[in-house]
Amino acid sequence: MNEAQFEQKVRCLLAEACGSSAALNEGADLLETGLLDSLALITLLAGLEDMGVEIQPTQVERDAFRTADSIAELCKTFARQAGVVV
Figure: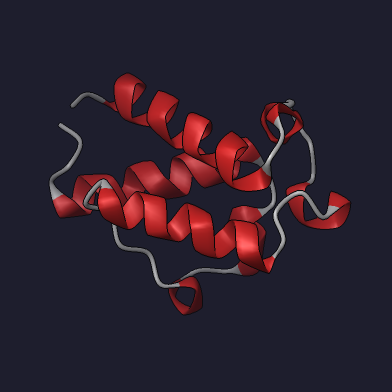
Protein backbone atom coordinates (compact mmCIF):
# COMPACT_ATOMS: atom_id res chain seq x y z
CA MET A 1 0.00 0.00 0.00
CA ASN A 2 1.36 3.44 -0.79
CA GLU A 3 1.32 6.43 1.57
CA ALA A 4 -1.64 8.17 -0.06
CA GLN A 5 -3.81 5.04 0.18
CA PHE A 6 -2.74 4.46 3.75
CA GLU A 7 -3.43 8.07 4.76
CA GLN A 8 -6.91 7.88 3.23
CA LYS A 9 -7.65 4.74 5.27
CA VAL A 10 -6.36 6.41 8.44
CA ARG A 11 -8.56 9.46 7.85
CA CYS A 12 -11.63 7.28 7.28
CA LEU A 13 -10.83 5.31 10.42
CA LEU A 14 -10.39 8.55 12.38
CA ALA A 15 -13.74 9.95 11.24
CA GLU A 16 -15.42 6.66 12.12
CA ALA A 17 -13.74 6.47 15.54
CA CYS A 18 -14.69 10.08 16.36
CA GLY A 19 -18.21 9.60 15.04
CA SER A 20 -17.98 12.69 12.86
CA SER A 21 -16.38 13.86 9.64
CA ALA A 22 -15.70 17.12 11.52
CA ALA A 23 -12.62 15.31 12.83
CA LEU A 24 -11.14 15.73 9.36
CA ASN A 25 -11.57 19.50 9.24
CA GLU A 26 -8.24 21.20 8.70
CA GLY A 27 -6.80 22.48 11.95
CA ALA A 28 -9.59 21.03 14.10
CA ASP A 29 -8.22 20.37 17.59
CA LEU A 30 -9.60 16.91 18.24
CA LEU A 31 -8.54 16.85 21.88
CA GLU A 32 -9.83 20.31 22.77
CA THR A 33 -13.18 19.74 21.06
CA GLY A 34 -13.58 16.30 22.60
CA LEU A 35 -13.97 14.63 19.21
CA LEU A 36 -11.08 12.32 20.07
CA ASP A 37 -12.00 11.16 23.54
CA SER A 38 -10.54 8.10 25.25
CA LEU A 39 -12.99 5.69 23.62
CA ALA A 40 -12.37 7.17 20.16
CA LEU A 41 -8.61 6.90 20.71
CA ILE A 42 -8.87 3.23 21.67
CA THR A 43 -11.10 2.60 18.63
CA LEU A 44 -8.59 4.37 16.38
CA LEU A 45 -5.64 2.44 17.79
CA ALA A 46 -7.50 -0.88 17.46
CA GLY A 47 -8.33 -0.10 13.84
CA LEU A 48 -4.71 0.77 13.13
CA GLU A 49 -3.62 -2.47 14.75
CA ASP A 50 -5.97 -4.33 12.38
CA MET A 51 -4.07 -2.61 9.54
CA GLY A 52 -0.74 -3.84 10.92
CA VAL A 53 0.29 -0.64 12.70
CA GLU A 54 0.73 -0.81 16.45
CA ILE A 55 1.02 2.47 18.35
CA GLN A 56 1.18 2.48 22.13
CA PRO A 57 -0.20 5.79 23.42
CA THR A 58 2.67 5.95 25.91
CA GLN A 59 5.18 5.92 23.01
CA VAL A 60 4.15 9.32 21.69
CA GLU A 61 3.32 12.78 22.97
CA ARG A 62 -0.36 13.58 23.49
CA ASP A 63 -0.09 16.43 20.96
CA ALA A 64 0.54 13.87 18.21
CA PHE A 65 -3.20 13.10 18.45
CA ARG A 66 -4.33 16.75 18.33
CA THR A 67 -5.25 17.08 14.62
CA ALA A 68 -6.10 14.79 11.73
CA ASP A 69 -2.90 15.85 9.98
CA SER A 70 -0.70 15.10 12.98
CA ILE A 71 -2.39 11.71 13.43
CA ALA A 72 -1.90 10.89 9.73
CA GLU A 73 1.80 11.77 9.93
CA LEU A 74 2.25 9.76 13.12
CA CYS A 75 0.53 6.75 11.57
CA LYS A 76 2.60 6.95 8.39
CA THR A 77 5.80 6.98 10.46
CA PHE A 78 4.77 3.87 12.37
CA ALA A 79 3.47 2.22 9.18
CA ARG A 80 6.83 2.73 7.47
CA GLN A 81 8.58 1.17 10.45
CA ALA A 82 6.20 -1.81 10.33
CA GLY A 83 6.63 -2.20 6.57
CA VAL A 84 2.95 -1.56 5.91
CA VAL A 85 3.61 1.47 3.70
CA VAL A 86 6.10 1.47 0.86
